[in-house]
Image (cartoon, rainbow, N blue to C red; front, side):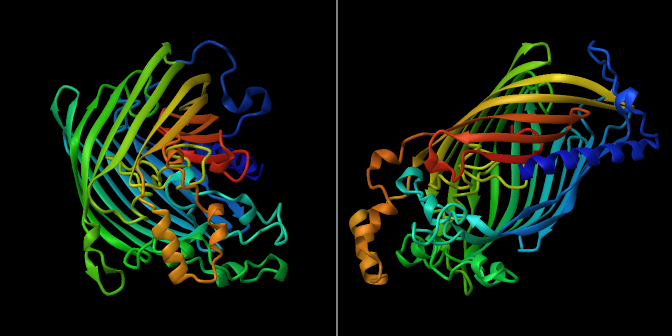
Length: 484
């Protein structure tokens, strides 16, 4: 309910910015803020020049604290001849919390800065004091809600800590990608960038600062510390690493538009080479030079004009050569960075409703199917708006699991963690290998509020089919733009 209230607050903040931009008064209630009341289809007028949407970023989390900040998307349409396609898009976001979780990001997207080429640039710093870590191989790792749910369970029930399935992860990212035309709808793609990860244990002292004694987190090992002690996370990956990368591939694009297409196909196939080095801080990481292969297929099928569309996406990511550290396996490679962070599998960008990184493996596949309805279209002065609903079904599964040998694991625990009761190991792992390849499903519905077919405020509500995939019944995601 807290996130729903934030959504309505954010939407209410859009209205003043629109009227301020056009220097127009807010109309009386009889005119419904200038919204046309007739039920006929509203004819969209070409948008020219500059337009923008601004949202405050305000929320509260018991562990992360009060979040404050803002985000903005600025579009330039020129003389309007390309509308709804923009000439240039600039996105800014800055938000931070009192418990050190933040998003500091700038991105740029244009098909016209370099004639006949699409250029995207992304720079971001993403500190995360309580990043989700639920172990390897999806259902092979047992998720125990009682261990982290302080609202429902006590120590007598088996509660450990709200931070048990968390670790610290700070990410620095720079990416530059370019797209050129080969012939017709076929394109070549190239990119370069760097991912800088700094990982470690949750800073319990910071999270406990200023809290009452009964609200403080205990000083115990979480799953991340257990994995380090048991050898599942190696010494040379536990702190993170710096990974420059090069990317190249092919894509096919017959969509009628970039944002919320109503027909056409988008497909890409590319490889990403990530480098790793020997350093004093991270250790010798040269074994983590790796090559990953990605394939994506999206299809947009019109059902009724541009008002109803069926859209689906099929994607996979495989480690083709080398080894990948655990923190890079949670990063889903894409040709264009349009969201703050692409994490797999689980969360608001792959299989909605699941915990972030619930399915952590060397290779995975997932699918998203959704119906897109424009249930209401209207104009507010110069701006074109619509409200949409999107029921959806998501699914994901492991293709390349981690090789967890039960006998070797028990030996490592006995040697490095002698106080651990090996009789309780089945509370952490399900060694039935059939569980590894069991698909993960979720379903839900999305609400979209779009301005000028480009700035889209998106709220998705999703619930997993299996309670092993999420601590509660469902999750909400408030984002900018469609998921695909």
